[in-house]
Length: 218
Image 1 (cartoon, helix red, strand yellow):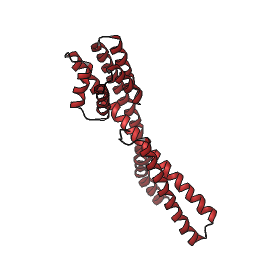
Image 2 (cartoon, rainbow, N blue to C red):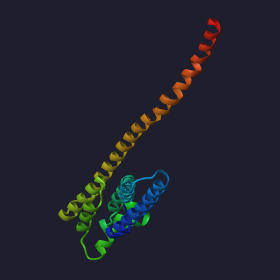
Image 3 (spheres, rainbow, N blue to C red):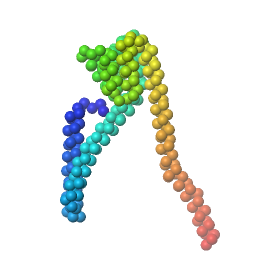
Image 4 (cartoon, helix red, strand yellow):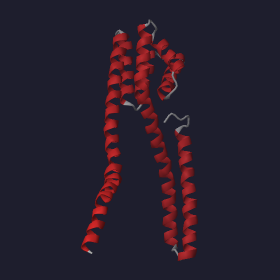
């Protein structure tokens, strides 16, 4: 999700959410017991449901944060791929190109590339850093790009053609994503027309005629 928290921090926050849900559900159960003579077993079940609901709500928030983070990374990837291709074509090494991209961009993918640079500076190889990025990132296009870069660096393949091909694939994937999103939005935009505008038009079209027929028949 791009957060600096560890798994232990998340579990602690999840348990805290569960305890808060338990307390709120218990308070609601006591109110129901005082007003509607709610049973003790019902209060216990409601408190347990509040505890589970609090933990599940924290998990849902994490899942939503991961989805937003990965969606931003997928949108950022075509531009980053183009910048890397231009930098390598200008004569820079892969690591220097990544450093330049990290300096000029700000986003989820830039943060992941900054981790890659830090791994190389701490003694790792560039190929291993790209391989770690491929395993760490959940976006398919970015993961495939990092794996391809790791293989190309290990085998000594010319990186310019690889980067240009990856940038072209990224632009094509971004275009397909936009087309699919536009198709889904088009269906959603039809719903107000079908369920709100069209019934209103029908009412305004037929209601005066119905009133006229009523007067004539009366």
